[in-house]
Structures are given as C-alpha cells and as structure tokens.
Length: 230
Length: 230
Image 1 (tube, one colour):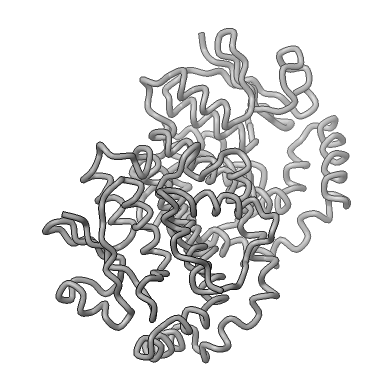
Image 2 (spheres, each protein chain N blue to C red):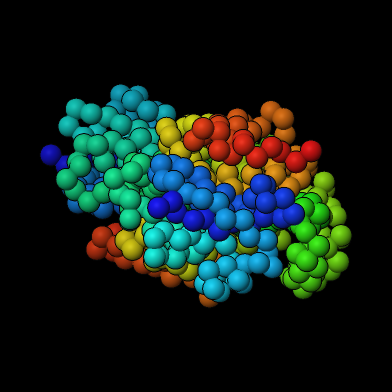
C-alpha cells in the first residue's frame, strides 16, 4: 500500500508548498517509494489522522505514523535500507543535522520573512485568518510589515549562502556526486519560495541556481511539476 | 615508520598553531596512527621536503607526500580503512566539505582578523616580516588595524555560530555520538585562537565551549597538551 504523505497546501491543493513537506516528497521519490499526497491546509492539520500531529509532514506507512521531516527521513532510511540511501552512512546522518540547522537559521529566516505575504495570499480564507493571527504573534507586527526591508537585506542574505556556493564549486550536490537528504533540506527552502512567490532571492548568475535546477529535475522532474508562482 | 606531519609553528616549536595542521594531528590520533611532528615556521615551508608544498599541513607517509588538510583526511581514510572512520561514509565525506566551507567563511574570517596581531607576536623575527608583508597585502592595511572593531563584531560573530550551537543541542559532536573529521575542522579554528591569543570569542555559558572542552580532551588530551596562551 502506498505511503500517505500529509502535506501543507493553500487554496490550491495541487500546489503543496511547505519546505519541510518538500523534503519528504523528494526523500520518498529518492527511495523509489510509492506515496499518495494528502493535502492539508493549516487549519485542517489538527484533524489529520485523528489529531496525530500538530505539524506536517506526517506520513502513514501501514500502521506507522511518523512526523517531523528529519525523523521521517531517518525512519525511511532505517525501514528501507536496501533502497538508495538518504544519508550515505552515519556521518551523513549526523552532518545532515548541521545542514538542517544552517538552512533553518540562514535560509528560512530570510525567505520566511521575505515571502510571508505571498504565503498568506496563497491560502484559503480560513487559513488566512489563522496565518495572520499566528504570524503577527510570532513577529510582533502586522504581517504586511514583515517583508519590508527584504531588498536591503538581500545582499547580506546572498553573502550568507557562500558556504553552500563554495561547496557546490567542488561537487555537484551537497551530498557529493549525487543528491542526498541534505540536498532536499536546502531544496525545500528554495522550492517553498518558488511556489508561493515570484520574488527571486538568487542572482541570475548564482551557481546555486544551477544546483536548484538540477534538483527540480530529479526523480522525473518531481519538483518542476508544480509550476513556479507567476 | 611513523608518519611525518609538517606543521606550522612560531618562535616556540612546541606550540603548533595552524588550524589546518590541528585538523590533521587530530585526524592522525583519531586513526591511531603514530606520527612525528615536524615544526616548520612560515618562511621554512618552501624548503620542506625539497619544495614539495607551498602550505602545511604536509604529511609524508612512507614515500607518499600529501598536502591540503581535506586531501590528507581523505588519503588517511582510504589508506587506513580498518582504523576508526574519519567521515562515517560517503555522505559524511561530502557534507564535511560543507562544514569546512562554513567554518572557513564564518569562523576563520572573524577569528583570523581578531587574533591577527597575536599570531604575529608568536612568530620569530624572519616570519614576523614575512607575515606582515603578506597580510598587509591581503587586508590592504597595517596589520595593527586588522583586529580593530573585533568587539563590535563579536555579537554578530557569536550569532553566526548558531547552526553549530543548535546542532550540538541534539548531539554531542558534529559527527554525532562521537567525533569525526568535521569536528576537527571546527576544533582547529578555535584551537588556533586558543594557542596564539588570550582573546575569548565565546561567551562563558556558550555550549560550544563544552564541545570544545570535549575535543581538547580527546585522544589522551592531545589538544590540551599545548597550554592556552596566557
């Protein structure tokens, strides 16, 4: 039976956008596992699988429910060891944590603010109200003000990506000659922005764009199947 | 026959201080390989092994000469596969590159400027002149001016370490439950500052200090054997 992947969507159920959910759709495709996308808007998540989780991604694999993107990747690695590896060994498992924390603190922090209104605008009415309330609490200001200053911060953001850029100057993927879960961690962040917003955070000649294109075309173009925001 | 490790020293040959050389002394100890430290001041490097290298570390293992810290680590992993792993698999080899680039761009950039005069002050007379000339060319100003402003930049530097701090909140080493070469990459940078300078870049309650202490005491306290600068 196919694995069920509960993933975040806005008003359009065919445009899942959560960075953490993209990590898992890519990981499932990497493992060659069949899965069925189960769209869940923000306000529907508490009702998913009888309240099994506060956040998505959540997967159901037979009678197993697993949430948290990193835990899901570890679960898939352990449960399907004969399929292509997501980590390339125990060292890769440990260091993928560092990539995760770096991505969260460097990329999510900037992009999450830069495209906040675009995320809002993708949502259905009920989710819009929920999103506004929770994000205004988190940021301490009207959501319209959160992206203000993104242009001024763009130079520093691009500079902060230099460890990624430099890594990609010696190898085609963060995982080496071929992608690993660490690539999907970073891919998820840029895919999130690509799907909700036309805002372009990377310079046209940034080699990170080449890597991102390579990722979009992995696994029969899974990432490219959802068109970029207009 | 013991491996020879050519490593950078100042006026005191018993105080090797190069971050890249520390990566390799730790890696050799991790592999349980006997090695002999061969001290080389900056201006002696061109004469090492008949001009084999422009930079240290350089190792001689029998008739093999290998330079560049990352290449040496890869060489040791390949040549001594039955000894404790430095990477924990191919994924770890790839992601250690990311840790290396992040360390270089985040930690070396700040610390290299902050303790520049302390490095200078450790050197013998001939190296002092060489160091001043090459660093003034690199920084485009008198070396005395390079550390200026380190206090103002300290808050941002400490904040930039958050991906490391956050990783160490879920596991004791960057390499997971035990250290890998990725730990020695970051350790090398802080050990460099510790040996040349009394300047303390980490707050007293920073959990990165706990990790650094753990690293200092690895391999029979190899790192701690060289006392901190007074």
